[in-house]
Image 1 (cartoon, rainbow over the protein chains, first blue to last red):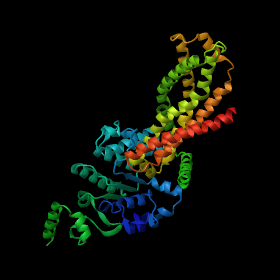
Image 2: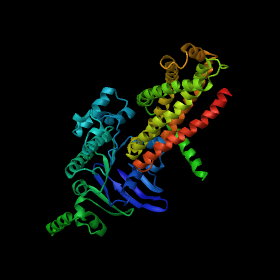
Image 3: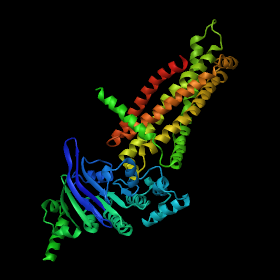
Image 4: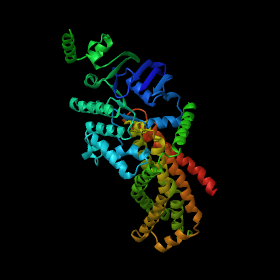
Length: 255
Length: 248
């Protein structure tokens, strides 16, 4: 479980995150949603330690990340896996080597065991056939799946995904969403996904927080989204005509 | 105006502090070190041989044409060619050339890794990204540079001989005598010592510019150019200091 208590972050007098409180539970896909520039990525980067908030607490199962020493932070980071918007695979390494990288760095297993583990992770994301290819030779969706395999190679407790569906077609996005959701429940991880993809919100949003101009505006889950009365949330979620119709039908169904 | 350069030096020193921190896993660093020796060293042999060969040949022709006199012994051409190649060209000038080839390569590679979040990915994994990316490059270039210096000297001298054999500029025996005349082994060591310093400058300064890139492809291009300019300036300055220290 990850808890955020009164997180505050600013850049040169501009408040980017203001008093964010949230709780992300184990075994659930926790979504952070919001418009571009609302502070989602800054919040995610603050949670994983790429940025340091000025105020507040970030508790990983009760361990305060912000007050940890360098060694403790390093050791906690080995319990984290992250999927970046751009997949962030290492260009010079093959798909298999990319997945093996965290194992090579931190595992004491033999080469055979490490290779077997990496191949197991690649098999989990259905990419075992692409193990000898390089990131430049595979599609965007495949790159994201390799990033997922790399993120889970060390059996992390916490999985972070920064806009995992960005740049992908709707069908591939669904595959990625389902994969992240399945892995989360399978390994009982605490997963936090940063997204503005409405399919993800409706599909895998076990717990959702909506950020608006650096503040937490709304909190709920995918079922509560339809009945939410928050205007800013509704303006954001139901921006398209299609989703407006879906909401109207859903409301009529409830009546 | 003064604060910015001081801040830059401070950031550079902090980055070097992280670079020389204890590696997480020597095995992985060593593999990277071997890769970098190939990337930065072996892959530079071609250009070093090519440039050194022609410079050696041209120096011989120029000296022959400019100092030819009945009062001047004929071996002076070989002697001067050797001194130029050994003392300046094969260490300093060749490192300036390598600052362009290797330096821009390092800055753009690390800069691209920064803008595509590969460095963030390393940090999230708990890897010391500065150590993993920069230390093997510095170590590899410092290891390979003495060999490049040797290749450069040999190619330069071979170029000089070619002007005798194929151009008939002067007698090969005179050139050979001049090359061996009053030879001091210390000059070779001076060349090695200087080039090792220059290798450190090229790798560390270029890595700094790449590592601190902010923005996109334009920033990577600028970092690449800045790294070459700054490395060249620092090489020239340290050449002055080292020459005075080693030979003064």
